[in-house]
Image (cartoon, rainbow, N blue to C red; front, side):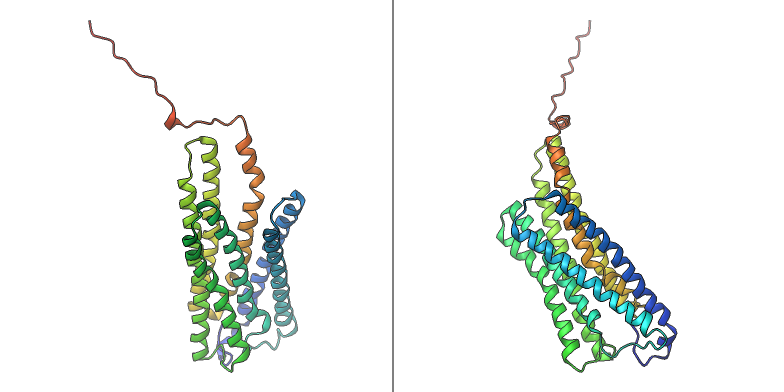
Length: 291
């Protein structure tokens, strides 16, 4: 975002507010898909543990709060103050709370993935190793918001920009590192668990593909946010990635939970062939003696 005293900033008001509106519309669409996933989860009545259901409930409440604050921003900037819009000297509370919400959502989804990794490998070293970058994100997000709310440092000043950029870089880089470590180790453990049977290996391949999708899209959005924040800050494009990162994590988690019925059907399907070509015995070829 530009500085408040910039003359060119007033000419960029449609761009700044337009990208904010696009970010909220995308957030609204992704929230609708997450809501559909939660309703499907409730309909299937899975007998999951109370801790897992509590995490899912917390994710849904966080996304609901986040969408509500984004709608408030659009109402305030795009409707009430559109004709007299000027960049604030400090972040408004809905905007500055967004990194905290994203950090907490990422931590909850990473905790779910770390638990899956631990149950698959039983390695406490890997669990601790992956938990460190996974939980740095909310700490740096909280520091970001405390700095904005309690100090006189201006986010758009020279010193404020460097300080705020450093905290945001720590938050989103730790998200990328955590996603790569968790999903990389999970794919490695799944690959090692291949049994050589076609039916089970098909399910494992599906789980590996899910792990790739879980880390890939979240990492792309985190890197895109850092690039747009650093080089295209005056266009406010970074808000498109920052506001929707947490929803991608939740969609991936809910997709893995809802796919359990499909995987169970694949395993129990009697029409599947339970052998692989590698283990088939090839008929011997006997050369006839020449006469």
